Image (cartoon, rainbow, N blue to C red):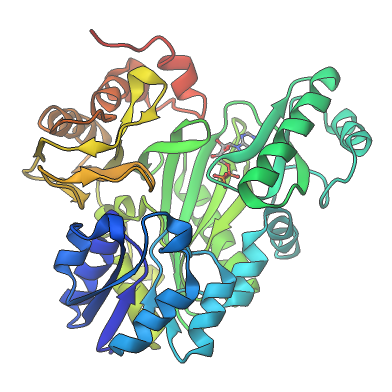
Length: 451
Ligand code: ADP
């Protein structure tokens, strides 16, 4: 096994990776920006190297600094976590060029999946259904209009380079299209430096269902079932659960096998997620593939009893996947709540600052992954996720009850968080019925406000 790995990330995911590494007897190297000197991931690592000033484009995104830190400390491999450089093919290539193992798929596989319109073509070629959409990028608004007339409104103008819910606009009719076309392109250019867009039919009230996969270097793979991530705000996930109440065992198997087929078509290696939209009529469509570990991977860990990050590291070393599809089964139900330093009463605006109290819930079936503690400051430079609260129950009903209990027991002071918003969402009768679609927040939580 590797003797030492570098974790090219911060926050809860850096700790998450280091935990598995330590259990595997692997030493860890943390990298940090000047804003993170006192951060928990720095404290818990065996070694830590400062890679630059606070802004991520001067630290966590600077490839040469990270490679240098790995070479200097004798790390053999780099785990990118999620976000930052996790889906950057150039970074994966730089690792290989410097004799370091990138814990993830090849640069070629990242490239084939990284661009949404190219990924759609790859999926189509692999026989995986995609949301009805333009065959490739669309150049002019007239072309867009012609496409929309053919499939019918509403349509979604989507940035090819998109991610994080950015560069995506719904057009409800022909008049609206010009406006949304311009808006999506402007946003895409600002966020990704690329204003290429394509069109998709906008599905009404779908569920977001994604399949977790793991594939080793010999192409042996398994699907670790699905996560239902339909509770979103502005196309960004807030609550994730597994399994999805919408899937029959047959559909689950079909989607799992389609995900593995897609992975095989790009010689995929490591952990990955195939994201799909699940329509009201029961059809599913490929949306995109995330070529990395995701925030919500722990939901799956709770129902399959496997450490996905440990498996990722082991696969990267060259070991075979430690289990087969037949070894897996679903145990109970798990739900994750993203605890963000955001103020839901002020349109979810970020709420960095000093945390004066941080009391986490515990007890049977509760897992909290966080880097935060009382007395620490949340820097304003990075994403607002500060903790993930996960609950497990023998049934969905039990998981919901445990979730409410745990949310009530989670006390954070000094900053605003999404904790009581989550409680209110969970408390909606609709949530209990499981009839939860991507419009849940706007439909159910629009009038939410507490005293
Ligand atoms: P990003 O990569 O920016 O997160 P995704 O392509 O993963 O964007 O889409 C994010 C969310 O946007 C989905 O989970 C879904 O709620 C919504 N969405 C995306 N495409 C469609 C579509 N064609 N129809 C309806 N909703 C969509």
